[in-house]
Amino acid sequence: MIQYKTKCMYGYSLLGERPPQLDINTEYVIIGQSKFFSHCVIIQRADGKAFLGEKRWIVPENSIY
Image (cartoon, rainbow, N blue to C red; front, side, top):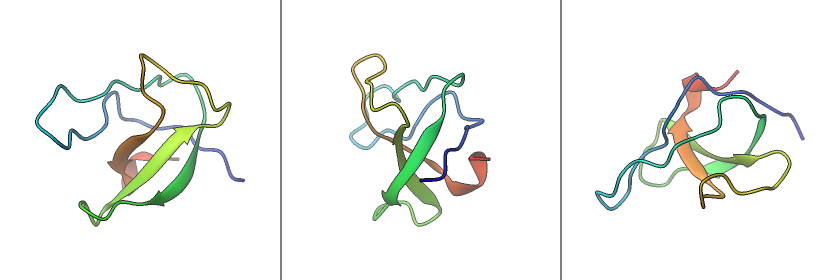
């Protein structure tokens, strides 16, 4: 799988909760396309670990490199 970094510090909030924070110092893999935000992808850490209780994030596709 191709690994990416992200420029985002936070992912999208789905239910009005505080947006989930991302670890900008780690690499991520794309696991899917968001159904709710057409310009976004779903990512998870390449090492499979959780960060601050989160395992998956929704970020704009143009924020990954």
